[in-house]
Image 1: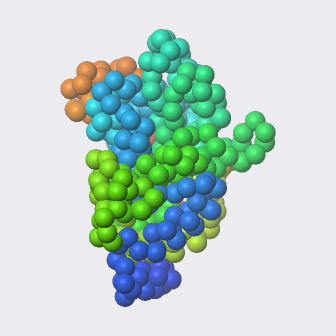
Image 2: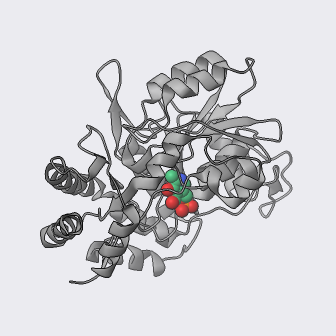
Image 3: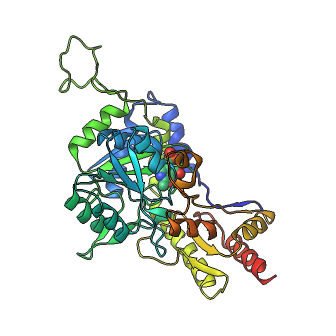
Length: 384
Ligand SMILES: Cc1ncc(COP(=O)(O)O)c(C=O)c1O
């Protein structure tokens, strides 16, 4: 049996043709593939505006800049996420606050979020970054109610959840990143994610002001748009109006994204099948403390089990060529965050989750034989 990773990309002939065509065209960057990808992505997600960027971390950084995060800003996220969800606030010298996760969903505990917000004077917190962790869509309707009451903005970190949704109080599917509840949402196109561009990211929003600001910040703060220039002295003229960055995506990456997006829904269907197989097998097993399970609207970037002796299982699987992963080491326990004063033990549910969690292989091209082998090997470990 070949190595079975926890996640990997699938590149089709159509993807290759799509990239090839752009490589032979006039534009390798700043060309028409970018706006085509943005338009298609907006349609898929159900938002008004999309801004393609170089990766998910750049997307987070631009969001923090667009929302004017600075050293006075206090922003909340959860410890069970990739460090970038918190780092973006630190890039702008803001202060991070953590709220523990809900042990059932592994996403931010909204009751604890409310308690933290209400423990401080109004205006203390600037914003919150809920993470649709593993593909589980956070109920942003509830988060939005809190955010509105206390004047917070929301950046939805939807890197794990394009195509995911929760069902809102009007019984509608509220798709991740659709801009109905969050001011801004971000996605990543790293190869292990649903849509692979190599590196790549997207910001989505329904807010035209933020959209325009993000366009400017993505490309050095420079504009050539005659409608925006303070003066216009000739065809060559441009102005740098803000301190921006070069966080652009290339056109050939966008071409790959356009092609991959066409099969995004098919990928989710397959991910849900894989999840269902794991769930059915593991639900009767004593050694499983908890698992992702079957949740309506889950996008299943990851399928997570919690077990005793996780390290033993991880090593045993690895010895059998099954490369699982741990998502995530709680952000507040990282040396950088410890140096900022965060103390281990402060978010016990996240820490307990981390002690037991393991992400199993989950990607659309995982074969039935491979999944059966993963399941059999896990079971074997606990039977011996
Ligand atoms: C939850 C989350 N946020 C942000 C990022 C950053 O995305 P990228 O790797 O594209 O910079 C990732 C990527 O792993 C992620 O999983």
